[in-house]
Length: 342
Image 1 (spheres, helix red, strand yellow):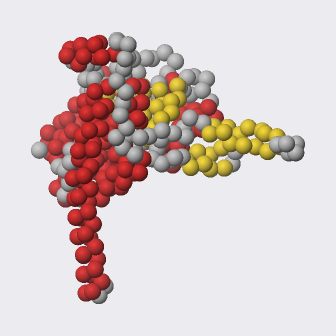
Image 2: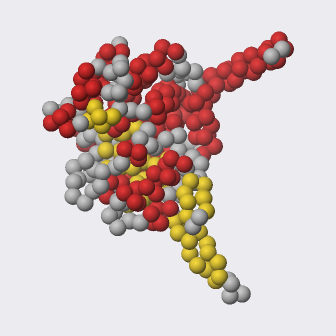
Image 3: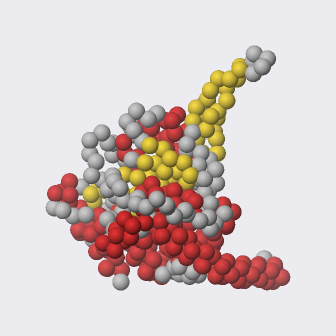
């Protein structure tokens, strides 16, 4: 590379960096308004709202875990409205077929009597898709959703159809339900960037909820983002710089949870059958950047890793039967490894 070309490249990088800083400063108040608007509708779930927004900013999918009646559907619909996304809903049941998700080809006849097949898109063709009670569908049906999540396209009748951009799946799973459910395969769990746990609201939030939702009027969600603005923000997330110290911390954390790795401690080797793969480390890299952008910061820190390690990694650990019998949880193992990092 000549000195002139090197100078041009350096200047371009500097200009891009200045532009990114300006975009972060511009987006920060917008996303604060987005969080506030959703928080006025979905009460007492501020950490859940933050993690859902991190998922969307990262361009990924999330699994929402919580008891019935905690507002999972309301959360998804509110997020779609505020961020300007087209939403759709799929109610998973044992008799749901793959074509009920992806769509099907129908036979049509024109005025000249000629017959042809036309593809009728299913509910997966949305920008923010709510997959409600995902573990009630059969593995065959779940596999149709897996292709959409992994490749952002579906195959029907020998043809491939591209899903809209952006495309995100927010799936719900009620942990107290056992009858008539199917466990999610490890490959599908790994496609969810975050597993987000919804807890019961505190007393003040629940009181406000009672007063706000039992009247004759409901508060509509405002639209604060456009699809183009969201796509630009997702691109900006991947351009944010990340320090070598944080990269090493992510690698140390992920590798310390793999029993096959020589650096894994004894308690991990005893309790875990399989640990997080490289996709988990990639997810942590992107999610920490998204959290930084959400807070109006130019680069992520170790605090972002501390906040996101359990939502990103807990569903990617396979505990053996001995660990489950002893009451060991994935969350406790991750917390121990985080403490060792600091």
